[in-house]
Length: 246
Ligand SMILES: [Zn+2]
Image (tube, rainbow, N blue to C red):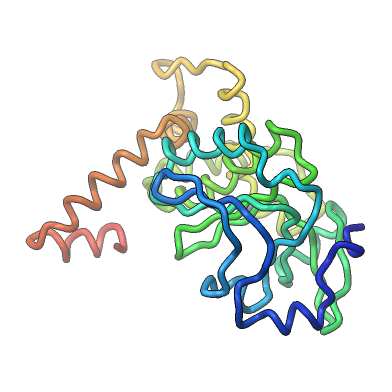
């Protein structure tokens, strides 16, 4: 449905070695910048994921400022790109075509329009601001933040969240039915309700709810930053690398 605004596939291929000229906002080190996606991000350079021109909501200042506040609280080290239409081409998402716009690419692959993506291993997330209402952008942001942060939770906390998420509504899609996606959706919906003022009584909360609140409140971010500071001190470097993988 956005194909009239899309880069022609051959032009996209031709631009693969230089910045892709789609304006985005970027939250980095707590500051908001504007620019274009750089091809030094391998995901974009390979043409696997890309932003496309769409309804020009990408510079909506209030929405971007709200995203900035959430990133700063929950995961200040994350780099968060906020741009127009976000598309991805991957076999894993093939069964998303029931839920999202999709189109056949000239190379035979299938592309689906997605709301956001967490780029594991590089502490980078992408959020599409097109076709979202304002709270919808924040809900997607919470979803991607969860993907980026769940690796820092203890196995017990993660298992507790799994036991809740596994009881959720069945989805006719392998991707959407995965526990990873179920956890992220459960968290995103709770976080959105907390954004709207819903309260949690921590004294009564079980491990799963306390773990998700720990992410939302920024407590986990503080833990991670403190652990990284301790890991950076030379005597501890090896121990923390084994425990946390960084
Ligand atoms: Zn997800």
